[in-house]
Length: 436
Image (spheres, rainbow, N blue to C red):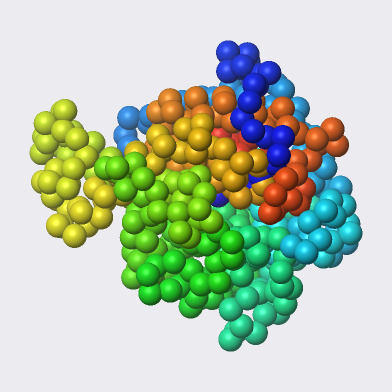
């Protein structure tokens, strides 16, 4: 899919109208993605779960990045590279020592390392190329060792306890984010069969551990301060793993989606915040992100049915129309519900009172912003561009002089917050500007 005291969504010095026409490097070349695509898969994303697109290619519009944003990303990437530890990992530190900001004064952990390497991957670094390719390689080895050295009957992949990510996002966050990174990495051409098999084996081990810790209500156990965030990330990881062809329990995934949908009432626009530390932002952004893939599928099905003449050109996404389009009653109900929740939650997620989160910015806020942005990007259209103009300006304004970002409550770690802010600022790099 991160919070601060000075990030109160006040005046922004970078207006949306100031955004220039410079193309990012990812727009200048087309990267190979989805090395294991499912049948009839048309990949237009590199790290947001291999999202399919409808035939009109509406998600393939070019996007220009403001030079000031590019400069902020460069500074952040440089800071992360220097923050890498000797063992190849990165750490956020202990929940009991939140004031420690020196990345070399804390122990490394898989959750923080996964966020960092995901940000490296999203910013045009692979195992073969890129300024930070070596940093990425060392991070991959760190995570592989963590999973490979973990006993099969142990659901966690680290013996560390009370880290900032664990305390606030949940005890299982390390294995969840590690699984997400491995699925992202498998979308690239690895050019190394031995390494690819290691990653696949490690990912399968992570999937098993994630599925073991799901509760009967579809949430995930040991969820920390804001358990809805861990559950949303677990949902994302399993969706992503399923998309790259790994074996995922469909019952577990269905329960997870149902749980997320129940956290937001699309009719009353109200969020259930009991698992979100009482913070609407966490609940709404989680629902928006977890419902995004089903919502996108529902829209694609209706578009196809219109072109085939099964539905009127003005037909909306409804349960009844999905049935006409050829889906069963149960599947149609699930897709229609997800679509309704997704559209309503996206709108609510950008309200000023919702975006204020806990009152200032910590890691949880940044993570929530990331999930909202990914949800919007997956649906296409202009909403995500408007969101990005607003969000990128805010993040550039609160970047520290050394290139890092940090939180002002809960997850204060500059490693965690910097990686997540970079994932937000480079979110459009996931678009692939050509179709097969």
